[in-house]
Length: 136
Image: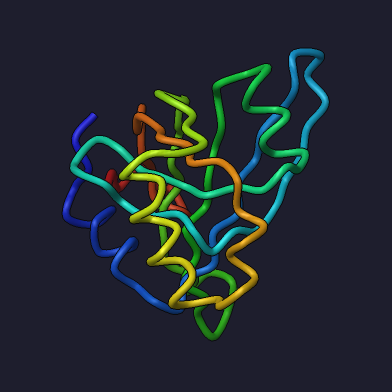
């Protein structure tokens, strides 16, 4: 899928919250907030992870869903999008890994040292965060 201008605008918003849902091969669900989600190109996103439940789940089940949320004054005014993702690759080193980790480190400082894995996702589908049939 090619990311629409609306999806790209969501990624450009600095004050957004990213909430990623994953499940393991048994279907046990995990949901977590992350700050490292970035748009790589029109069809791929990336995220840096530590050794956590999300990473363990993605090793077992490559499918994930992510909310990119820009809060409004009321719930119905919330903006953002829902992304349906599938792991393309997982990397623990390399030029892309080093480059993205350096970008994250600028934002979060030494806390970036806990990031051990780069996950590249194909964007499978996107929907508005409040979907009333308007498309995205």
